[in-house]
Image 1 (cartoon, rainbow, N blue to C red):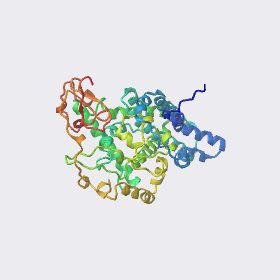
Image 2 (spheres, helix red, strand yellow):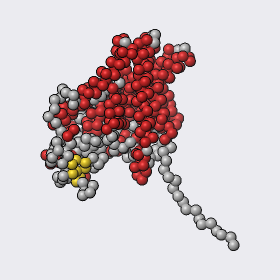
Image 3 (tube, rainbow, N blue to C red):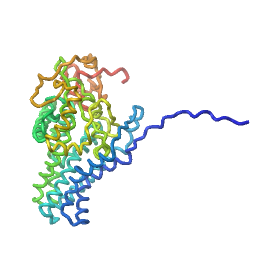
Image 4 (cartoon, rainbow, N blue to C red):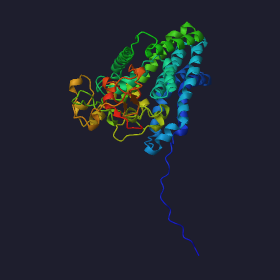
Length: 453
């Protein structure tokens, strides 16, 4: 008797991260100065010292064009397991020891390597590019709720002397993104060269104001050891002192130059991430919540692997504590014509940038200039919309949670680091005070925690 086999059941293959083996390539970035040195030895040409900018601004854009796009995103059911996979954490952790070893080696080369002026400029630019990418590592780690990851973020920021970024980005930019008040959101018609001084000065001023208010709530001195900006700058001074001991005082000017290069690289990325995009105002005076429409995205594989999915920026702003491997593409987000590396090069020539990007901004908003963050417009020019149901103020409760990341304010414990001592009723806290973990939602948006939650 012949048995018939049952018809095969159509099964969906389990989702897997096809880029998983490639994430370690991000560790190549801090090795760029060493690779430059090796190429100089192999070719005998001083031009090889400029391999780092060639790699970032020529090779990576070419890879983006050739390798194409990867729009695949993890489904909801795998997010939790993906977040717990420690492989992805160690990939980012590995960047830091390589960054610091190469930095010490570079200081020795700059001081004692017998380099010509051209050689020194090339190596310094390479070190600066590493510092700029290190700010991206700090960006990834600084959003996490694990304490040691936040400290690692500060260590990464010590090289480019940009420690205040940790404060301004989390507690300033994420609250005010895509508004006229945000120094890190570029305006339509604003060139990158006009944007850079505005964002650097505005970001520093904002960070200092945010930290000063936090310390005053706690009853502490602004100019004291509890100031996270001052401690970050102290870390930079300590690191630079070690580098001067290795390379000598002649290294100091080049340390300043590499810091400028790193900051320029980071702020160039900020320029393109929200160019021309604007959140509308509610009748209450607040802005609508951030959604996919307020960030430019890109699925170009090359830059996404080297920058740990930074280009999936919409999901990052919606879920700031989400780890890079779990960030998803959003079809509602506006899309850049290529990856960040190529777009930075495009921004160097403002008239070309505007010819490419301005029509995309206007198409994204349907030609409505009231929905554009543009040069010459102010807060009064922002279109007002009716609040969504989610914007309704929640009733006071002993325990309330941030609806974005789940951080819980417990009246019994308070939030001492934020200046709210134990026993502080939630109703007495400034309604505009943002969640200290994600910075996305304000206290007035917090929702009561159900019993047992």
